[in-house]
Length: 320
Image (cartoon, rainbow, N blue to C red):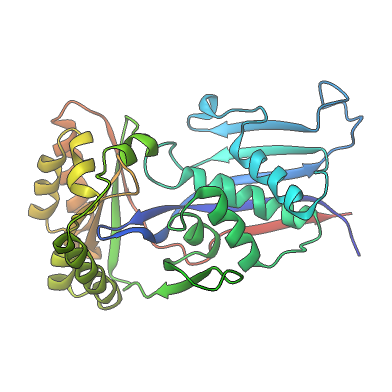
């Protein structure tokens, strides 16, 4: 059997929650990080010292902000995969090319976890199937809403099961082809930790019922593209009322998006990226309105009209 010498893993960024789907609903988007894993000989001239077992290089936007030591998230996931097998990871060069903005609520950490696990699995001869990799990714991330669509693609609902072996049920959520996710990516960051700290520790029964009903309606709205359902369904009482206080100008941008024709606007993941769901014909107008509103707050923003990525993590393998 040929030995895999190098594997390139391309992983889509994601949006999670989509309003009422807190920590259980996510979708893969058409922006990507790429991770190339290449075996190195322990005596390779590329390694600074014989005791080193990895070399990390980074290209792309914000490359200087990515750690290239043992704290690199892709390398941590790579190493943990081999620990799961009870093996020592091979010396490896990891070349990372960034296309997903960091700390903006678009799943950059999920791409690193999925990339590291999938790359390690291929170099090891693919001993684990995709479901096993998914469980490792969820355990590493702590919740499924980003890593599941990053690995599998599409829009996915994850429910934790009572079966300790199986662990999770993953449901593919149909996404109407006329629905376009328009994202406004600001030039400031919001850490997931800060966004979680601001949430209350308890919620009322009324809020739980509200979110349950709205999540059910959202799933039907995504499938049918029914605008009236989506306008109502994207509301939430679990996280957005609290997190929007961390995003300057939120109400102004929200109003601009709806006035331009968006069905609704949500916080992507933990934020600060804002995502509007829009009919394809209105995507450009909504993007322009959101950009103007945010720039009027004195902040720079990058607008992207994206699509759903239905492939998830994909690999290109070089064997010897």
